[in-house]
Image (cartoon, rainbow, N blue to C red):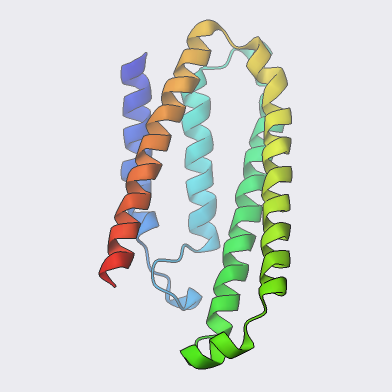
Length: 170
């Protein structure tokens, strides 16, 4: 059981690691994923969760709501990242003193509050979608889900630490 999850997760991260470091000239910024790459990554994540859970035919009727919630959350995240990139991109021509002089902390707090509210709504929708399915999972399926979650969280924290180290070098 744990070997299956480990193999599936390893395959996901091996397949998606080039996407994480891909550069798209059309986006204008190195390291930014294109919409197609985001969709591929989301598809791989969904497939990994579905494969790890090994849902029964009775459980499959709850899956579309979960998949839709995952996709909606991913799309909203893409939109937030694009908006941040646009905001940062519009300030590229300004010097540090101009940026400091023109900053608007109230506007920043309002934008941040809106982004957090959207993330909270997305997470609530995801939890609501998962609830009926989670109640039908066997103990073994719940254990696989927990193991997969821990594996992914560990890898995500490793990536965050690597990015922090790279930004510290810059």
